[in-house]
Length: 239
Image 1: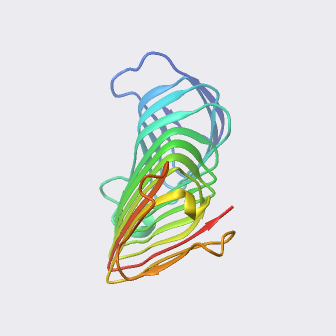
Image 2 (image 1 turned 90 degrees about the horizontal axis):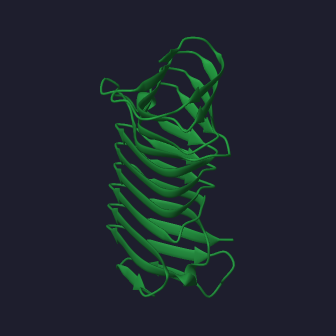
Image 3 (image 1 turned 90 degrees about the vertical axis):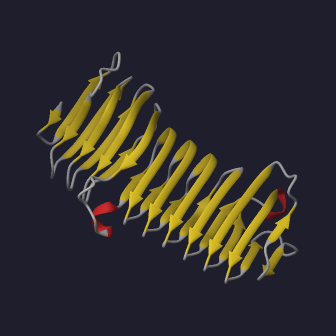
């Protein structure tokens, strides 16, 4: 199905049909409500502004976001997205930006080649993202587990909350602010050719500055693992 015009639409799901997909034509502004929809692919063509309203649990194998497309998730139901992808013919950073803001997801697995992943104000059960030649940015986001693996790009956290972090940055750094208390995390941190710097805005006694790997409090219920190759690990814990 293709939505050719800007406007408000409601799609009701059913049993998954192989190859089922929803396409939104380029340069459109759409408010879309999904009610228990299961589909192989949701395609946002170039410069689409989509506000997605989830009334019931939906499932999507691939979310394809083309140049300039933006997705805003509203509160309500939840969705499982197996993969966020860009078309194979997009090769510049500007064309491979995955930008998701707002709302709630069951699980999010985002990939971007020669580009970046940016997520803001999102609540999800599990978050996993990988990039090549681009950064991963998480702002005001909460998840039960966060995995972020960036090659030639930073992993940047901004008031991000999770009991489990696994972050790697190749030829780049892991930086930002983590919502929580540093003393309550088990830490396994490495900064090859760089430094590990940790502080807690609410605990002056918690401060780590080291050029060697840091392993501390490994039996804690919460954990933060970070590996920066040719970069730094620089984090501040905040409330």
